[in-house]
Image (tube, rainbow, N blue to C red):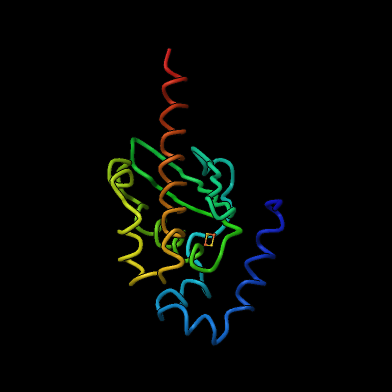
Length: 150
Ligand code: FES
């Protein structure tokens, strides 16, 4: 999906939030579905690394990180995945902003699941998509920096 279409997609997703979602997800997850945090691609000067990762379910998440002195100053995401993925991306970015890379690297899918108050069993992998994207983004950032060294 082209990036320009993603904002439209999230609007449509929000419209689709209905009683079904309330039955499926807890109140906190529904709140993040309706009001995603840190959604969207920042301006280029606010991006140190951008990584897209496609999960086994076929959905993709993009992470945009602004990193200074090994601290994640800003974290944003977009995804064409399900509602649980929007909540997982929101939660993950909230948990890593202002934190050292080491902390972000130590996060596991269960930490996101717990922070969200429990994803439904058939959506546990959505938290994993967020963490895998994050870890790959950090690896890419480190590789870029090694490559820049003289
Ligand atoms: Fe694919 Fe949630 S990320 S179903």
